[in-house]
Length: 313
Image (cartoon, rainbow, N blue to C red; front, side, top):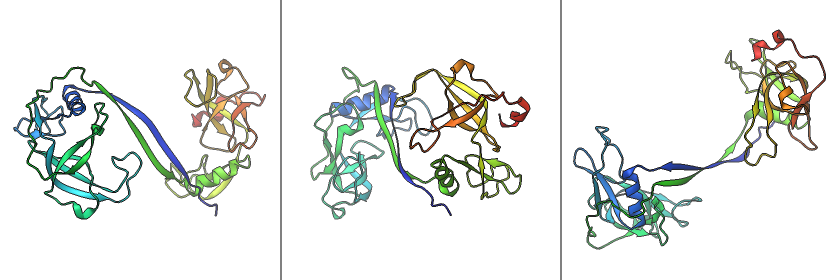
């Protein structure tokens, strides 16, 4: 049996969003070392604040300043901090109900060990040295033995308010394509394309998924297809992708390889983009040490008749 492959994979992008008046005031307040909540329809003060009441869904905007001190309502110990977390040393994730608030805020508590954390512990905000109008303006919480801190009754009106944020999103994980796709990838390294045949409907699927998408039964019989195929549908790409060294415009197509009952994706080259057409017969072009075809080019054969590929559109 072919050994299943696996590899680390990172999905990362900057998420940009605009802020409504409540979130704008909350984040601007953090920049100015002020914590603002919002009063709900039932009179409770919600921190972090929301734009709409969680019970009635009414729009709310009565801002209320709360204290930078509070009480731990629950916690969990993080013995191995990961990249991008608030602290580089072990810390506690805590829910803190700030004085003057009726709900709890999630953040990090900086203590030497888990034995120093308890529900009901008093804590206070440790502000970041450099503040930009983000939740990270709260560096973390720290133990506090004093009285609740006072407030100035800030109204939420600020000079130069924060109106938008960019939040980096990143997901690191290990991906395994499974048995069927691992066999497909191994075959590509040998300049071969291998699919799997369904034992029920006898269709050959490329790339294989280990099961027939129509019948729902497992597939295991390997079938080599291609290398030539037929363009079934295509699109002309006019926007250059980041980190992709291909000049626009270019054509990306669905290609039904000979012997396959499912079209796969591939770029069409070796022909002007405005001459690509449905039914065009193509073959793969491999680069040196390439693990998959770089693109497909015309074979010079007559175009395939529509009836030969219409079921694969």
